Length: 364
Image (tube, rainbow, N blue to C red; front, side):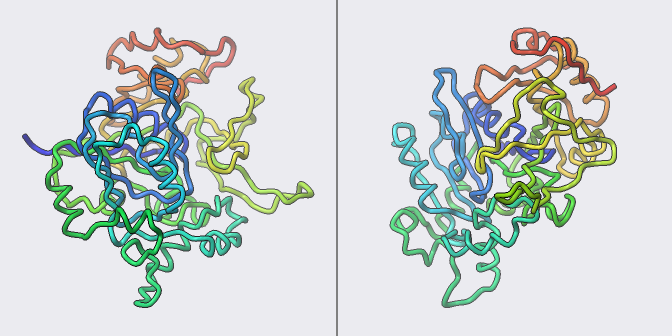
């Protein structure tokens, strides 16, 4: 059997439901291996059918699948050891037969890195230290590399492996589920620099950061998006004066208010600040699908539209924009909030509840 690589990336500005789709897919694709290369600057949420909530900043959400044998934390990662340890301990009942392997070249985040990132407040940074940790690694100081193989943190020391052991684990994999982070519009190469994250987040870069070889297997690329994209909050001082701007939007979209949708503002997973919300951009969608080589689209927050019929029309219009096709539609972070839909009739949408009654929102 040819090795399968399933990679999920965000094709907007983040917070589109990667964690939800990963959990959903993990229970259906039955991967034996999960691979990530995250930094502690974004949260991924999945809620299973029993109501158990998984909010992970460092640990792959695919851990919810009983098929998983190994979780690999790639060389492009920036790891907060305490967070990774606490997340692993919280799912200890699920990981008894899972091997955690940390690549020796993954960067390690400490308090110094977090303090150093306070200068990035003007661009809406979460200031969790990932960029500074990677910068330290890039300096290549033999006496202060700041990577997993030199870490004295007990948890890291227990699970760090050699490059050979990491590669062997990958080679033994048959079905690999890769969970990207951030979003295409935040890529340092493709986003609105400087209002971006510190690295590229397209699938080819994510695979490299995970240490997955070129032509390693059959790749299926999933892109997650929202009916109304969001950006993280602008930043304000204690007097209410704006001191930071999280970035502009595409020319064919505008920023709106949550009240325009008759809704309370969403809060970000990590910073707990109100998100900015925008209308849908066809330009962003087409650019992201092209650059990320997207095969399958997950359209989330469909319930921000008026009706299930609006969601059907929205998805069908997306299918006209690019070769990528909408296969999954969702209304939130739980397993029961996602439906696999037909390319023609989308009947499963009508089994989703929570749609609005007065606000439209198709993209015709």
